[in-house]
Length: 218
Image (cartoon, rainbow, N blue to C red):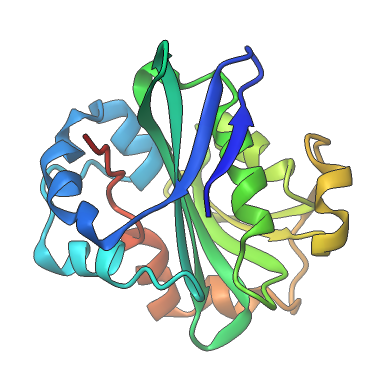
């Protein structure tokens, strides 16, 4: 799929799938992200990619349970460069839930890139997924606001400056109508459906190692 979109400042852009042939470029371009962007995005600075990371981030993308999309913005007349990546990965043992990860190049942050890309990703999400379960640093309000635009949000303080976040997604038929309208933050309920995912040790590890790079392609 290729979808033409427009950023809020009028910049023309396209959203395209991440391809398996992007593996080498992903590895080469990773270190262009600033240390602060890495910390906010990945919960810790990640300077180098392992083969295992690349296997997950590129080779495991199947367009069914693991969907990764790239936003390419017009940087000069008729020239489009990749500036953001977003991915959604279904949990194998909780098929109605998925993790979400977004990275935007430093110079494109604050221009509505993530919001625009996520609108496409949510519409293209794995079939049957109706909630996001992920983690966000507590000093990263921009990411929390971004998630609030997707649906009602529940937060759980996990300590060490990290929120566990659950987002209830709107049915696909109503996503377009609700796009851009922030939803309220709700206090996490004990014993609710998200709790096992947020507390299970193996999911904790998945959340903290997911999508530990954003590929920037030539």
